[in-house]
Every structure is written in C-alpha cells, then in structure tokens.
Length: 117
Image 1 (cartoon, one colour):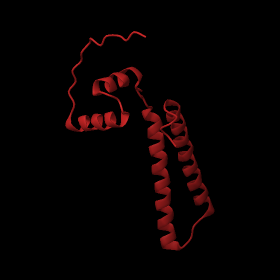
Image 2 (cartoon, one colour):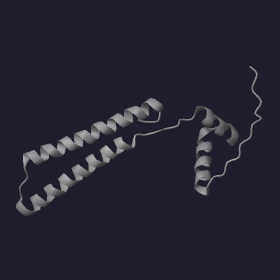
Image 3 (cartoon, helix red, strand yellow):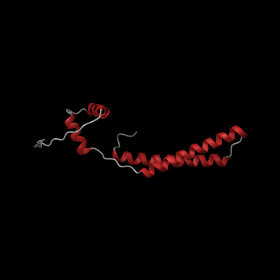
Image 4 (cartoon, one colour):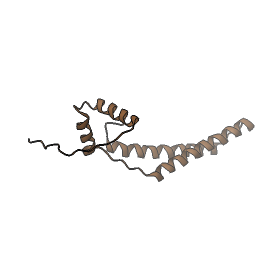
C-alpha cells in the first residue's frame, strides 16, 4: 500500500499547560512522533459539543436537592421532626439527577465505549 507524502505544514502555539497535556497524552499514545500523534487526533479525534441547557437543568436539580436537604436539616435541628413527604420529594430530586447523569454517560459511552467503566 502506497503512503501519502506528508507535505502540508501547520504551526501552532501552545501555553505551557497545553504543551504539558499534549506531551502526557502523546506519551500515553505509544506513537512514534508528536507529529503522527497530532495528525491522528486531527483526522480521527472527537469534536464534542454539549447542550448547555441540559447542564443547567442538572445544576438546578442539584441546587434544589441541596436546598431541600438544608431545609430538612434546619427543621430536624429545631423540632426533631422529619416528614415523609420531604423525604419523598428529596428522593424524587435525586432520582431526576441520576437519570440525567445516566443519559449523559450513555451519550459519552457512544463516543468512546472503552473510556467509561
């Protein structure tokens, strides 16, 4: 099989921290050169876009659960009482967060099945 000649050249500038990340990933890749590694990433790498609104929903759900926990803790400290309805609502919030995170994990696993355990 005939290999194509590598004749196009691109120059990039990296920050010190970006260069460290590149060097670590290159070392883990086992490839023979940084140039070959970068070519492989450009051609086969993953460009990932994510839905900011979905992440905002998860953040809001976490904040709601945290607020519920705080309210329950205050009430228990002042009255020594806890209500089943509060615990039910708390469990619903945790379940909602869990489902959203499972959905995200499922989508990420589709991108690289071997990276998520």
